[in-house]
Image 1 (spheres, one colour):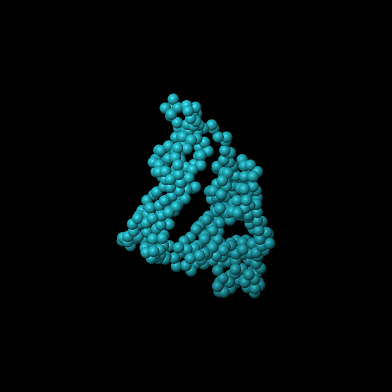
Image 2 (cartoon, rainbow, N blue to C red; image 1 turned 90 degrees about the horizontal axis):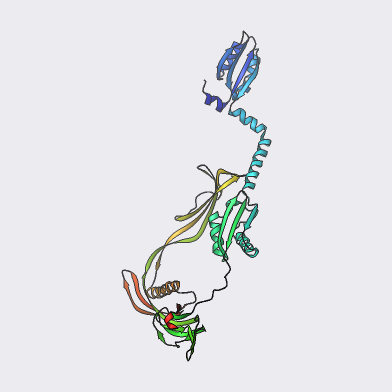
Length: 397
């Protein structure tokens, strides 16, 4: 009967009995199934014993029938603790609410501090942060992590070279490095403009220098287009040639395009689940149950929850579950031919300057091989073919 776990779980009471009928009282309790232990005499008419807390309230009438009086000396165990908690529930609820409010306020964004940015750039940064949901009054665990915020700012604001993002307490700190303004151009040294690839000249704009080519002229790589030596009759001087020479260039592209392809795509159905993670126990707060998707992919974000300046072993978990499905994409011969040409053009565009353009495409050969359309495509492009070349001494001796 000295099982401590038993006493803690069910609670125990130490009972003091006085009177001449204490033996009769004990016998009555035993016959009625009451569990007693640690029975001790303290003189001829006094004894103490221990019993379960829940049975204590049922022994008073047995004591009166036996001519004894009882008193409870000590109460211990979980049932007693629960009873006291209920008795003081108002205080406990108030304390719990107070701690909850402090924890919530510790996870709110109270301030955004930006250093190193001009007023116009700071305005842009704050606008971008608002789009991300990062503004005073929002919960920290509902916005992206520091790395995501940093990447989006640099990608969306062209004037930023670098931005440091740090969360300290309830304040986000941004340290900004802006791109230097374009400095006054240095004086250029004398130079020619030469062709950087084979082309047929279709247009030009010469800002400085002597043109030595004409429209529709075919040029080879390295051929002089605009001379940096101007003047005549021995009265010449060297200048930095400047301008644009537009030419028609040619490329050959080889494309392999499967006529049938298995793809994984999203159906558009999404389930959002939010939960609190304590240790290994995840407590759902939004989005109960598992999605009824046969195939799906999950994006998961885990953010720490703070209490004042301390990180708690509690996390806010956000899961976005997207239904996915397998589809088979099938092209007809004509469709595949059209797609292959577009693929070749897009691949070429990615390797040309932004101001270049595609003029024409010609299919050189096409065939079906192992379930694929194999094509060789000739592409005409229009691009600026001029590049600078420093003038060597022999040009002006």
